[in-house]
Length: 130
Length: 131
Image 1 (tube, chains in turn blue, green):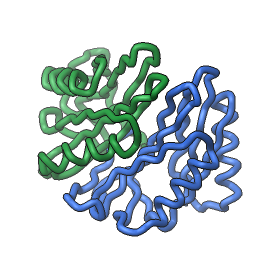
Image 2 (image 1 turned 180 degrees about the horizontal axis):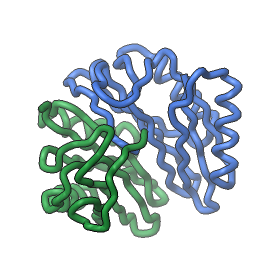
Image 3 (image 1 turned 30 degrees about the vertical axis):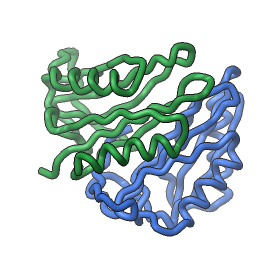
């Protein structure tokens, strides 16, 4: 993780943080895609982070969105491609997420993030492309 | 998420990983702000959250260095916000309320991590004034 510089504005169509909770990978993908397809969001995705917790486990992706990202890489939300996978180890989760992203035929990959959670534990990976 | 390039040194005044531990958001925010106020390196270039499930004990890690390539914040210009919530909506509402109340200029990182069986989510943002 390193920093970006996103201009903050009081309106959530200028700067916003949106969390997506999900219990599995398919739910995570659907919710993120539905969120990004919705109205009233800033234009750019500046970052996505992932955490996991609980016995289920439950996963939380946090998206930082802004109209102006002065430094750091950002992605137009209309071109974001999201792929998520859950597996019993981090390497498998990452591999499955990247395979799912490949099926979306991205030009660029911007981030692959992995988090662990649950008692097993299990791991979720999210790959972001465009 | 992207990489930074920080010049390494074994001198903690030149390159350092600063960790603060706490059991709730208010405690962590106070400790984080105090720890960074005591830092002597020039720039803050990274922040992350770790969680330990049983006791809902949290740690926040900061990376500071004298020389950083990539986006960084001059130490002393940053403001750290830490909030928690039982779900995504609470985390978002609590953090945006803090940022709006302070009319912040720019945001450099927003990250969340979960802990406990509930679970409880802890979120961190770092802001700075436009220079």
